[in-house]
Image (cartoon, rainbow, N blue to C red):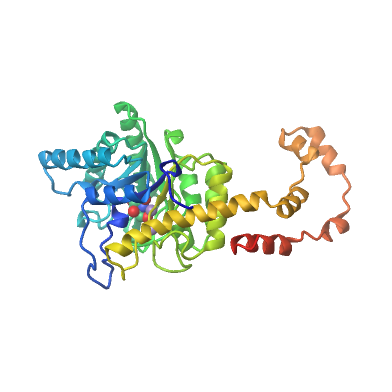
Amino acid sequence: MYEPKKSDHFTFGLWTVGNIGRDPFGDPVRSPFSPEHIVENLSRLGAYGVNLHDNDLVPFDASLAQQDRIVKSFKSALEDHDMKVPMATTNLFTHPVFKEGAFTSNDPDVREFALKKTLRAIDLGAELGAGIYVFWGGREGAEVDASKQLPDGYKYFRDALNFLCSYVNDQGYDMKFALEAKPNEPRGHLFLPTTGAMLGFIATLDQPDMVGVNPEVAHETMAGLNFPHAVAQAIDAQKLFHVDLNDQEMNRFDQDFRFGSVQLKSNFFLVKLLEDIEYDGMRHFDAHAYRTEQEMGVWEFARGCMRTYLILREKVDKFNDDTEIQGMLSELQTESVNWDRIAAGYSSDKATELKAKNFDIDAMAERDFMYEKLDQLTVEIILGIR
Ligand code: DIG
Ligand code: MN
Ligand code: MN
């Protein structure tokens, strides 16, 4: 029971189980794992694949010859352990050169260098078979709003993405982009802080069809938002190209906790969203083990992420099969011929009709929706007594 299968599409970034436990107030607590060691162990646990930033695999200052050797060894580990690389991304946040931003830096040389680094990282991602390329703008933000004409931050980011979309098409790569929002950290304020902001920004791009979102549980939660609602808007916009699963306490720094370790009810509705639409993308755990752990604890962390997802998926099946709950929902979510007519398109006759329509406002206002019972039944599903 609850053993992950390749078809579950569970993935982990090399940087997740490879996190060595450094934090702003403490040194590393774990020794680094090689990418090959990570691939072998995640495959053993049932994961489908690994994701990577360019520098998770190839050091920032590696020569092309070193890069070739590293990639060759990584590819054979992927082959040996039947692991894929569904997503790749660029590290545009660690090196000091990006301290004032990457694509949105005031320094055009930095913007150009960030673009060059991303072009090469996209090539690496394509070589490894990545179909999704994530952009998380960890340094795209500000502490001092006097530092730039604020709209320029969005213009520069758009310039870069427009160029990169054209590059992917020019190279003939089968690749789409997924933009990942975060409200703050490591910058005081990050541009495009939420998934909703990203969806609005995508509409301003030259080739919006190539670009979707990669919502992360911890990031929307940091902003005090309801994560399933953010994912629902992405699904509605047909822009859920990827998702970063983890967990997070509200109003805290980015904790990237094991999936399901904090917000069980919210994660139940997240899993319900993904399973109800038969989401066929990657279920990526962008999370890491507590700083208290050593290697054994790291693999327990990875196992727990996948196991909790599968347990919640079983709870979703119970919810969807629960006759009492489904009976309540069929009462609540009634079809409306009138509304379908309105939604089918405007006409002045329909407006005239609606303006003349009478409603029994008092009866409507007195309706008892019985949500206390519905939510109690849901809680009992999650608690495992239904
Ligand atoms: C942090 O949540 C970011 C980086 O780890 C990476 O760029 C992206 C990919 O999941 N998430
Ligand atoms: Mn995070
Ligand atoms: Mn993430």
